[in-house]
Image (tube, rainbow, N blue to C red):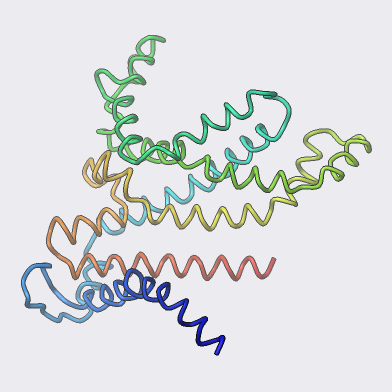
Length: 288
């Protein structure tokens, strides 16, 4: 009787998960084997043709995948250490009463919408009236000024910098919670034994926050492959697809080119990469 009542209470949750999660995924998987413009009632079954074209003939797909990997590598190698350093700074006594103000300032970008962040950085990196070019001109480095978001060599790096600036505070808060959970007796004992700050970080703090680091690596990697908003708002994948990622290429194919079947095939590949990464990460964590 109690188990039936429990299932009854869980029914709304499972219904929502099915309607907004499982059903769209299954429907997208089915559509990936069809040629459909998203409007006409007729759908043409083409088998694996969408996947064959995606892997063998679509050069932009591979460029988008490479850009996602660049997001992953740079975010993991820069954002996580930066977040750890900021958490250490906030948890220390160096800032005194300014620690809350400093933390709020770093947390502000996370609260801002993608549109606001995109507009702010677009104005700052504008070629003629942008703050960055004005600064370079002011310090005598005018030769380095350029159209940062319109240059194929710098556009992707600028977008990665925007994303790190906005999302570092998320990892910082998680690190800060882990630091607060370290028993103060351990640090006091190490200090009494003559350990300096670097030794306390290396031998006490890092071993205690290691599970948090592995979790953040998984989350950061997932976010890197889901990246869409900031790129679409600022560059829409340009110039010449140099900032294209899998999510923007999927959106462009499905809603701009009216190739819903092809867009669903890209979505399935993106889902497969996410599931594969989650599986590998889970196995590695269990081995540790």
